[in-house]
Structures are given as C-alpha cells and as structure tokens.
Image (cartoon, rainbow, N blue to C red; front, side, top):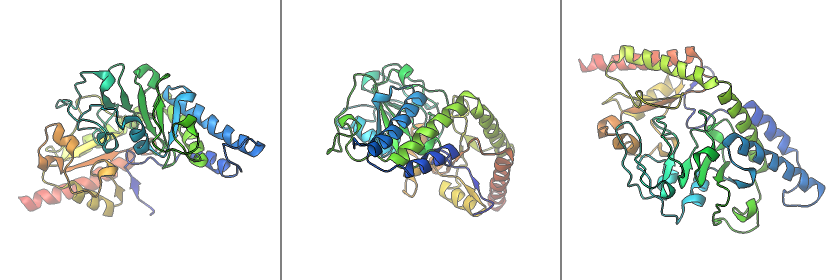
Length: 348
C-alpha cells in the first residue's frame, strides 16, 4: 500500500537488496548439496560460502554454524532437556525451555547466578534493553542484537547462541544455532546427515544464501556507524512524543538500549487499540513481540519490570531501521499525538 510507513523492524526487517540478489542467484543452482556430482558441489559451495558469511558476522567458526528453519527451531535444538534457568523476559521460543526463576531489576537487567546453566538474551525485542552478558553463558539469544549493535559470539564465551535472518534483513524461515568449539547438540530432526548430523533435512539453499548476504551487509552497517544515525532518529521521535504527552513512559530510556527501539506506555490506552488506529493512519507498529500478537494477555516483560497490568497492556513498540527517515517518525508522532489529544479532550 503506497504511502505507508513501516516502523516494525524488530518483528521483521525489510529484505536487503544484497540478500534478494543472492537468493535469485541461488534459485538458478540445480542440484542437492549432498550430491557429489558437479551440480551438487556448486550448491554445496553456495551454502558453505553463506555459512562463512554468517560465521564472520557473528564471531563463530564456520563449522559451528548450524542452519535451522529459524530461531524457534534453534532454541529447541539448543535448550531441550538441558535444564537451563533464565528470566521471564526471554522470548517465547526460549521461555518454552527454561526455568524462569532469575530475578530482573526495574532497569530490565537479569541477575545471573551461574552463567554456564543460564539462558540470557543479548537484547529484548519489546523494550530494546541490552543485557550485560557475563562470560561463559550456557546460551545467548542474539537475535535482536546481531546487525544492530556490536556482538561477537566468541567474545561472549557462551556455549550456544541464536541468530535469525529476517531480523537483520534476510529472508524469513532461516536462522542458525551457533556452537562454541567442542560443544555439540543432539539432533531433534533426524534422518540424513546434513548439518554435520545436527539437523537432518535438505538445506534451504535459497534462504541460506540470502541469510549469508544479509549478515555481511548488516555487519558492514554496524561497523560503518549506520545505527548511530538511527539512534538519533529514535531520540527525535521520543522527544516529539513526550513534548506533547508528558505522561507517556519510554521504557528503558535511562539505560542501554538497541538504537532503533522505543517502547511507549500510555496508561489506559490499550496497545492493541493504538496499533489499529496507527494502522488505519498508515503506520505499522506493534504492541510487543510479533510472536505474541493476537494473544489476549498483557506483556509479561513489562510486568516483570514492575509495570502494572494496565500499564503493560497500554504499550506500543516502535522499531525503526536505516531506511527510516526523520520525516517518517515525525509524521508518526504527529498522528499518535493527535489521537492522544483527542483522548485527553474526551476524558476532560
């Protein structure tokens, strides 16, 4: 739809042209990566080149990158039957496999007691709050961090890590589990010996090619300081909103956050209502994690941070990217504040 403004990058970033080009080239490659003939070797070469791109972008060794269908499968492969502990702020795909008993302070920081038995996110998808990662974690969810802030799996010293292509401008339906050298996992999808026996099934070569290209481009953006300009636009948006709505709360504003994420609480104004009103006005935002949309519940992330149920259900997430302009966020803040002022007038 023409004239719309996309402000939901944490749910899924727009496909990068480098990824699209790599995927189109991969479509023309005939053969199966497990075949030994020339056609198969060509496909295998495409896959291994992408594996190297992902490894270099994430700070892992190529042989320890396991391609999966996405972060959800990667989390299951890494966490099932491991007995990890974590916190209630973890993404649903991680929360499904952990004991959520770790304390979280009002700034969103998790108290880690035994790193080797802990699963911890590098950055939260709803609030953008960045964790201080202790060395030697059992598992780190780097899905939202990779491609937005400096991160390297090797210097995190974690045993297992998670990354997803579509969060950094790659295609949907492809991700990777990162393993520390010497650490292995028990395959949950069994059959052939693909992915060094860790994940059976013919590889998604088209998605893998796009994933690798997106990783290379995303890390170049981080190194070139592109996201510093994004942070300035985010701050411009937050200043515009709070200059009119002084009762709006920007979650995590006082601490380290992703450069593109604003979680705005306007108590009493349902997040779902805000999302629908902004959608009709031509703006795509969310009321939290995309994987939780459509579910009748308040944000457990915000409730964990100490916000009331009313406040937690009155939040929207605005997440932007390098393609977002100052004009985009100012148009959105104008639309949002118009609805805010109408609500205030009706309540007067």
